[in-house]
Length: 254
Image (cartoon, rainbow, N blue to C red; front, side, top):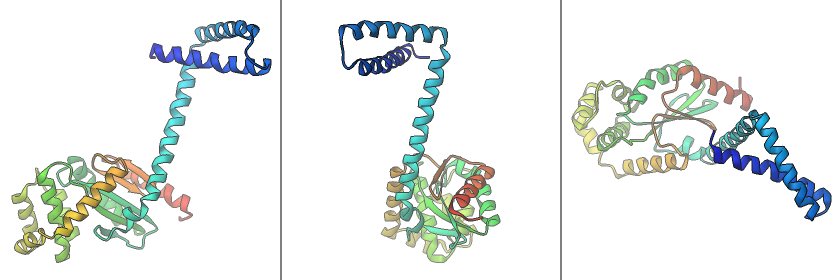
């Protein structure tokens, strides 16, 4: 353990005990100043003989901080619930009237997003009471922005989800040529898609998604928001299902 940290902890423990003594004595007096040295020596001896006290104290502090951070994040997610769940620029899959919402922030060139994709598809297909929101969050360069723009443009042809699935299952890195090839294979009119990609509203949606991710301290992909919980990374299906079940239980749903 860090020696300066131990020294600070020893001093803090001594200060706490000393403060109690001073309060009991009614103020700082020569006697209490003498007692302070004795108290500090007792604390030092105690910690030398039982160093595990430091470990236990630091673990308790770390756990307290962890719980406080979880609560801060949860309150932040609740404050952003409308932007997460009701943004008209985001495509909704699964059951739009589901009793739990799941938001995925993803990048089409993110290998971890691709790794999670099958789990996500199976989860949405299996859980008939899940509202699933797709949030393009292209953070891996210009080619990722092109793929996200094309996906959002595919909404006008009613093929967003099939195209999304095709992009996620594409082997290799996506660039504009690959994106158009995937679009054609998915049955989209490529010429129309390219025209629709120039819609300035798409850039606005991507900007909103970036701002929302930043507000939620989401810097990587994939990231899943499940009601007021945040799950980072390529989560296994079992973990997502467990969080969804816990959220339902807390909301009084079976």
